[in-house]
Length: 231
Length: 273
Image (cartoon, rainbow over all chains, first blue to last red; front, side, top):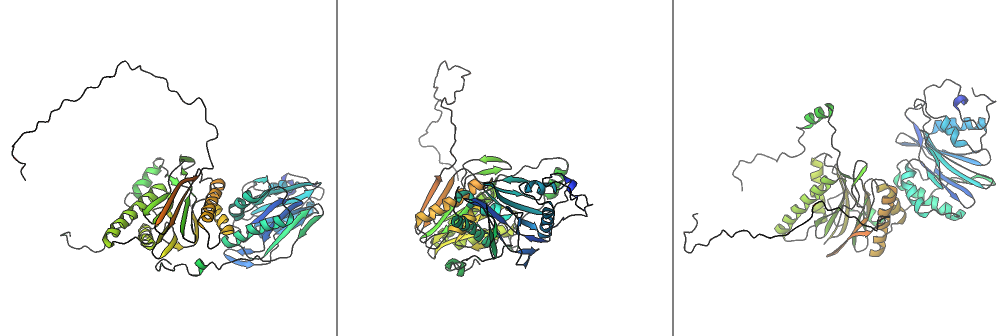
């Protein structure tokens, strides 16, 4: 069990004194990408609410973003049970700013991983932090981060269109653009997503909502017009 | 034409004869040579009058850039072009082969080639090699039935799409297409969008780079814009240039004509049959 006298900003692995039963080697229930950007007043993050069981989209109401303390937010993709365990640790330790280092300390000594990629954001004293950690402990901080498929699909868009001092509406529109592309092209995405906002005042998580998508390009309706043969 | 007896369908497909020998060599310590691949971004899109194809120009050999400005948009017919990703030799050979087959077919039928003909020839060839011919293609063209755009995967399956991307940079390029494509684009908007998609691949994917090639195909007209965009110029060029020291000095230049040893005989015998 965790030692309650352990200081809040610890980085070493004495936090975990329990003998580890074997951790996740194959993720079972997983969440897909999380995308986060810095905007004028703080951090914006979006994630859909799907939990896939292998190739089945089993859970459609999974909240993959949770506030930690008053000023920070953690969003996760990957194995959902490991995410819940991370949240339990964090609740016990009541962390503020060094969240990503603790993500690291839970990392592999002999590849016994918590199978997650995390996005962590927080605003404190006017400073905006937005960082990401993945399962093997790679972590960095940037103006826009994404996990999983979001790295390949969303970051090119963000690299082109992000700029300092995005307003709230523009930031949300940009995030929705990324989430829409992910919805079209990631097979484990669902059209029910939450967006969250972190500012000096605190963390706000929106109600789940759906994006408008358009699947009715004429060329999709009748792809082989004039070229019968190719299917 | 041939006098041999008909032996049944020709035996094609991959010959696995050398595989065991190759495995034995690798076990004995031979470093198998790596392929020249085109880790790539290739895209195509259909606009209101035709098809636009785009490609980057980097060819890689493992982690090294082998060719900084190669051509990935291959000619198949005057009205049909094909972008290729995967092993460079495979895409070149397969497109050349289909191109020559189509030329013969055009002479035989006296008509302009159709895109579906090229499609069928390519996909049946790739399928018979069960994916070992590592060529992923974006085929586009305009024939009398209209503009067509197809993707062909190494195992031989195809898709017919209004916009398509292939290669290692396909996700970055698809992100651009999915957010910005709409029907009824004009030529300039289409070229702009294709250039943006390829640039997204160039800057966000390590396997793609250098310049943007574009090919615009419309009814009866094609425009091959080689190096339409060059977003990666060489930043530092020494002004001094290069000078190579002369090892030997040239003393004298003399031209000696060869002696003329052909005599023309009048009234000789004609050559025998």
